Length: 186
Image (cartoon, rainbow, N blue to C red; front, side, top):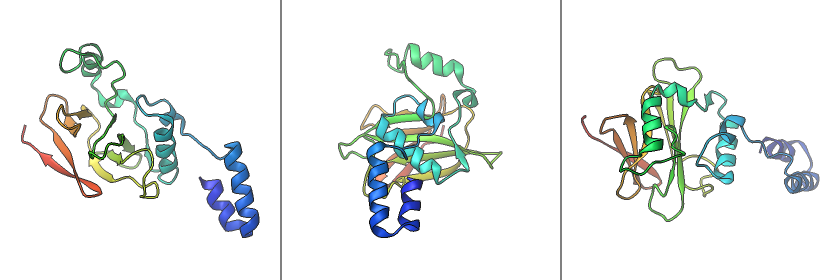
């Protein structure tokens, strides 16, 4: 992505297009963040979209499961799930589903802000592996905790639930091109 932008700016139009096409066909400028590559659930297009976006946001990183401080809950969900069906690839900071009801798989990822100490969590929701937004997420919500916080799916309508384990949390419902919070007291 960055090589393509550089070529468009630095080279004459004809050469730029030729070089970008050549690089694209060789896949030389496809860069995938190694932390993103290790994330479960995301397909290759989703991983590439997240990697490209993170390239433009170096202040953010993919947190480890250990930062959740919820290994007991993670293991329970992987073995028994929520409704007696285990979720073997459960990850507290990644979820994939049709979150906005358009029939296309969307994905949400909780990231960590390298510069924030109190509430470093950053929730990012992408509507599909690619859309008309130019690669930008539908939602970027900052200042969330990472410890004992996780992403879940509701049973109705594949809505995203964000919050601490053993709480009601907040349901994020589609509202236009973005999402609105529907929080309950817990």
